[in-house]
Length: 396
Ligand SMILES: *Cc1c(COP(=O)(O)O)cnc(C)c1O
Image (tube, rainbow, N blue to C red; front, side, top):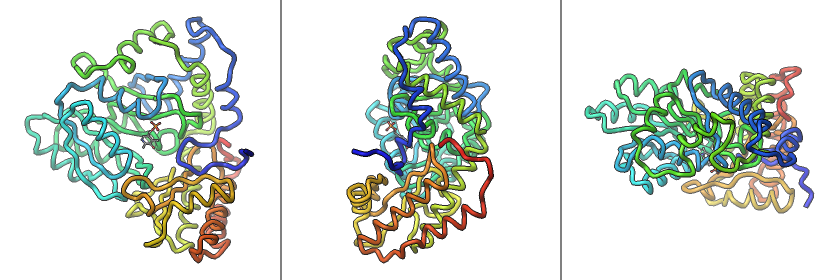
C-alpha cells in the first residue's frame, strides 16, 4: 500500500505531518505535571475554536458518538422530552441514541437535503407551554447530505418562543472548519471529534458545556459512568483524568488548536469556503446537482453529489479506490447509491482539491457518465485563480 494520495472522505481527514508527529510521542506519566502542560493548552485552544468565554471543555477518549452520549446523559433524565429533526444519517443516529436512552423524542421528519426546519422548531416550542421539552438537538452540518443548518436561527426560535430548553449542537463536521459561535448562538452543549476539522486521528470526543448545561448535571438522572462530566471536571482540577487519557491525541489537539489559531479562524473558514466553492463550480460544470436543496444550505466541508437516476453512485467510490487509490465518501442511509460525497475539510488546499476533482472526472468518464475530462477542473481552476489569497496556504 502506498498511501500518498489525499483522502476526500469527510473524516477522518488528512493528517498534517506536524500533527501526526505531535500525536505520536513517547510515554509520559499522565499523573505528572507534564501532562497538565498538554491538557491545559488543549482545553484552552478548543474553547477559542468554539468561540466561547463561558464554556467548560471536556475531552473523552472516544469519538463524536461518545460526545452525543456525553451531552444527553449528563443533562437529562429518563423520560425527558427532546426535540430534534431528522434530515440525514447523523441526525438519525443521534435520535436513535436518545431513544435507546429512554428519552421521549419528538422527531420532525425533514427531507434529506434540507436543513433544520427552524419554523417547525419554533411552532413546537411555542406550543409547549408547559416547557416539557428539555433540549433541542441540531446537527449543524449534516455530513450525509452536505447540508449546513442555521444554528443562530434555532437560537432565535427558542428565544421567540421564550422557551428555556437547552440547545445541543452536533458540530462534528463543522467545528474548526466552518463558523461556529458557541456563546453568540447560546449553544449549551457542543459536540465534536478529533478526526475532522482538528485534522487528527479518531479517538477524542470533544465537548463544550455552557454554565446552564453544567447546572443540569446536578439533576440529570440518566446513568453515566465513563462519560460523567462531574468526574472529569473534578479530575481536571488536578490536571488529570478519572482514567487513562489519550495523551498523544491530546498533545495533537494542543498543536492542532495552535495551528488553527495561527492561521486565524476566519482564514480557516475562508479557505474551506473557497475550496468548497471550487468543488461546487466543478459539480455545476459536470451538469450534476448537489443533494443540498438550496444554496444557503451548502456545506463548506462536504459535498454530496447526486448521480443520474439508475446509476449506482457507490460505484464512483469503489472504482476510485480500486483504480486510482483515491477515497471519496459513499452515500449513507436514504441517499445510499444516489450520491457520492467529496469531503473537503481539514488539511486541504485548492491544489489538493483540484486533484480530487480531476480524479472524480476520470472515474465518472470510466463509468460512462459522459463527463468531459477537464470540465470540472477548469471551472474550479477559474474559481481558484480569481479568489486566491496570497500567503494563505492553510493547514496543509
Ligand atoms: C462524523 C460525524 C459524527 C460521528 O462521529 P464518530 O466520530 O464517527 O463517532 C457525528 N456527527 C456528524 C455530523 C459527523 O460528521
